[in-house]
Image (cartoon, each protein chain N blue to C red):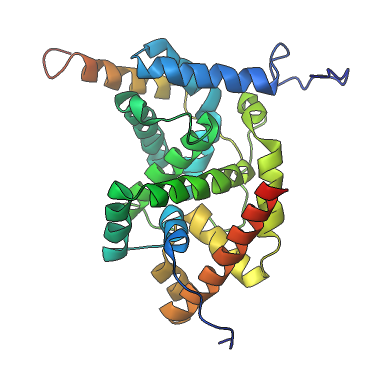
Length: 86
Length: 204
């Protein structure tokens, strides 16, 4: 272990932990609860997401199977026509 | 905008530059909120290879990645009004959305985390369309890399693993065979550093 002082877990830190998906269980619930009413926390969540999102540019793009669009189309049309006939 | 006479890569549409591509995507997102199905297809065409790459990277399983991708666009359709252009660019928002859906799927327990080794890049098929490359915000992309590079190797490795493999604190601690509290302080110190670096590059 290092002898550096412990890092304070302030709201911006908690937002980063939440957007990265580091948290589990009650910690996730607490963050989500905070998101539901705390505008600053929501802003900070977006802020981290906007910074981290371009990191995905490192991931090689891959072509999905050709029929996937049709699967999506079928599902949204089913959704559109309600629970009635296909 | 200055137009260079450099040869156009064969895979990118010659009539569109990055600003036009981003604007086309932004306007499709607006039309999507009005229930325009053609807008969804346009968004799919522009983003599918990027978002499928993300889903596959997180899930490490083709079938799961396909289901995740389907889930991403169907959800986007059903809740199109959730995108707020004031809060994120379309491609940032969609990338975040796809990553979150894939991580959620990973956490349902059907798929085991880490099916793909951390630093192993997936092969890019030669014929993969690269149209979405022009949506990349090169400047932001460079800035995040610069900030990540300021972290020590250990911290970088664990934060990368959280982002690209969807690992939680507990999983990272177990994998590194250190107490949970130790992992938390390593990562928190890294996140504090990243925040300072991001904020500094916003000021400059």
